[in-house]
Image (cartoon, rainbow, N blue to C red; front, side):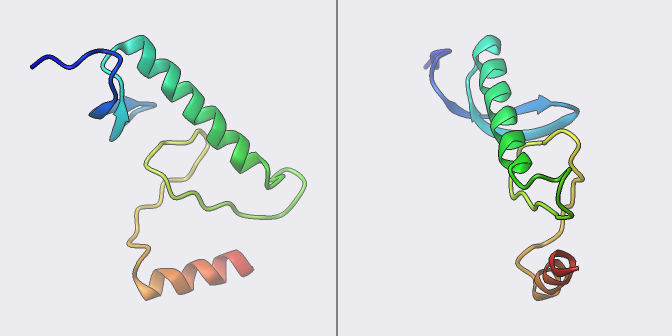
Length: 91
């Protein structure tokens, strides 16, 4: 059974040097447009913290690689990680 190009399905893709799974399109042009919009919306939401004006940290839980982000892969459900994040955010 052939899947249409305009139907979303879970696919393993590469973007900005990262490989990850995403509900996306088979057609390259549709996928590029979708990735552009996701990236810009994430940048805008992160920028709302006014990082250049305020001394703050933004934590994003996403499988999408944001530009200028530091990738941290730790088990965020572990109590030690939660305590470390609380201390980090309060400092």
